[in-house]
Image (tube, rainbow, N blue to C red; front, side, top):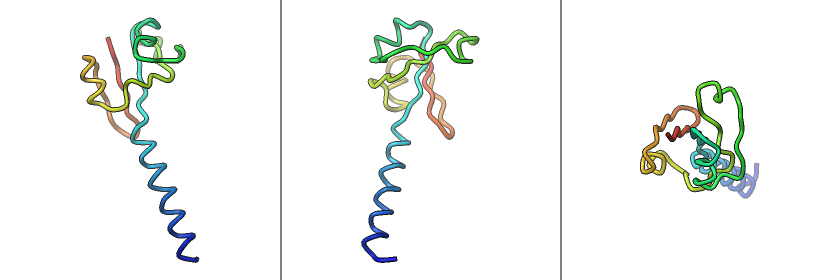
Length: 85
C-alpha cells in the first residue's frame, strides 16, 4: 500500500475509536428526565422492565464523569451506560 493510503486508514481508525469512546447510552426513570438531559426521544426497550427508559440522543452526557455529576450510576464495559434516578 502507498503511504498516503495507510495514513488515511489510520486516521479513520482513530476517529472511529474516539467516536465510540464518546458514545454513552443514557437511561432514566421517566421520559421527562430524559428530555431534561437533552434527549430527542424516549425509547421503551427491554430495560423498561427494570424501571428505566432509554434517553435517545441525550447529548449533555458524554462520559462517566458527566453521569456521576448528575448523581447517576455509570457502567463501563464494551459500551458506556449511565443510569440516572
